[in-house]
Every structure is written in structure tokens, then in C-alpha cells.
Image (tube, rainbow, N blue to C red; front, side, top):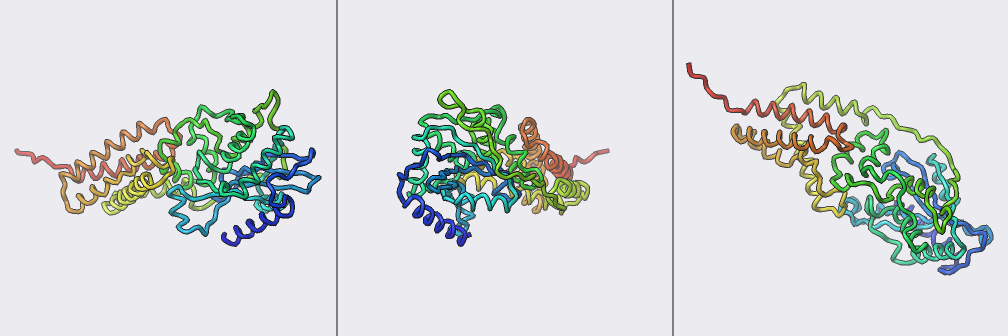
Length: 378
């Protein structure tokens, strides 16, 4: 990735030096067009939701540049820790249009273009703003999954140029962010399960902000500016059918088989391993919730299922303290009941339900094994 970033950076400098001479005020001709580019979904983690960019093309000055707010560098020290914490720096880069479109053609991802129907002055203003950002420290920003990403940054720079909050979300404002995200995980079962249990209350808020590329594309189709459409009808630059991947393990069947094994095994060791896994995941969720700046990971009520307190239950069971093992088991059964009631109207209820049922079986078995038996006197 470091080599790729170097090539892109070198190209950016070469592009700017040859076409706009490092100037922030190169005049565009009346033939210039400014467009919003929406890229289709891919099967890599970073491409599940598509991508957004801005294209500036001017045949009279030989400018055809795509500004991309979605760049990051894998060679960043402590990359994983920074990404998890939420202080990883993303940045804007420029590609030639030919390079950009070739990349998506290679990945077989559709690309759509919507020309902004704005005045020459506003086109120039947006172009200057993009170049100023590209050549300053403002090109860096701290990525946030909902609030600050490649799409929201494009919305912000266009709205800032127009001088008002022109582009707002149209449609799907009465459903949650979690519900909006769900269809994007088709063919990626464990990724859907993982995001379901690691996200907290923020993604259960109504999805009133534009944060995904196709939300912006759909909203632009319905947005007006100065009493006329802001964008032209969408033009298809590349068209591919998205292939939904199949996997022998990344599917609901392996998930159900494993949980069914835990239930049917009726084995103390298997039960303890299952509860240990849940507790360790709970510790991870709590730790990330406190450590990370990603608000999507805080206030995670899924810890009622993945309870860190299960470690105490396991410890009490190992030292054979039946009285307190029973009490902690009953406590977690109550957690499970509360969690189930709270989850009923949530988008991820059915994907988590098999784990709720499995946990119920395991906890009831542990309770029965440790319940104090009252001797019968004849």
C-alpha cells in the first residue's frame, strides 16, 4: 500500500504541475463540467458500500480529474489501533479520470455520473476549493463511519460551495442506520453478524444524514437549487452486475450448525467454552466502547448477551461454588430476557436470535446443575 500511495501522490503532483501549475486559480472554460461520481458495490470490506468522488472535466484545458476523499495509508504506524480508536487520518487525492475508470473497470464495479447544473462561477469556486484542499493540510480528515466519510465529505464541500445546506437526504429518513446498512451485507454473513453485535445505540438512530454513496445519488436526483434540478439525470459510465459471493463457511448454515452443536452436545466443557467466548467478546466490546472515538461502538447494549460478567460465573463454577454460580446464572438469564425484549424491534433481532436461544439453553443447564437440592425427609 505504501508503494501505491507514493504512485498516487507522485501522479497528483505531476497532474497538478502539468495542468494547473500548482495554482489554485486556474480558470475553467465554459465547456467545463463538474460531476458527482458514484461507484458500485464490491466484495472487499472497504468496497461493500460503494464510493463517491467528484469529477472536473474541461476539454478546452485538457483537465479531467477525479477528486477522491477515500484514501488512507496501510503503512501508517499502528494502523489497526488507529482505525479502531477512530483517529486514523484519511485524505483527499486526485486521479486522472482514465486511471480512475480503468480501476473500476478492472474491479467490475458500475460507475454512475451526475453533472451538477450550477453556474460557471460556482464550478470555478468548487474547483478552486478542491485544489486548495488538495495542496494543504486540510486534505487530511479523521474518518467517522457515519459522520465523516468519502460521501459526507463530498456533500460538505458541495454544500459549502453553494453557500447553503442544499443537498440533504431524500428518502429512508424514517428507518435506522442499522436497517439501511443491512442489505449491503448480502453474501457476507459473518460481516453482517459482526457489525450487528459490535455497533451500539448510534446506529439505531433514524438515518437522517447522507452517509452512503447511493443515498447521495438518490438524493441528488430529487434536489433542486435556485428553482431547478441541481444535477442532471444519472449517466452510466460502467455497468456490471454485482456478483453475490458464495462461501462454504461464510453463511448462516455454519452459524446454525455450530450453535446447534452447543445445544445438542449437552456437555459441561462445551458449555464453558461457549460462555468463555461470549465473555471475551463482551470484554472486547466494552474495551472498544471506552477506547474508541467511533460513536457507533459506544453504548453497546449487546453486552447483555456478551456479558463480561460471564467470566465470574465461569470462575465460580470452576471453584465449585454452586450457590453463587447459580445466582450469577439467574442474573444472566434475566439479562437475556431484558436483551430479547429490547431487541425485538431492532433490525438485527433475527440474526442474533439463534445465539439468544443457545445462551438460554446453556444458562438453564448451568442453573440446573448448580441449583441447591432440598433433601426430602420421609
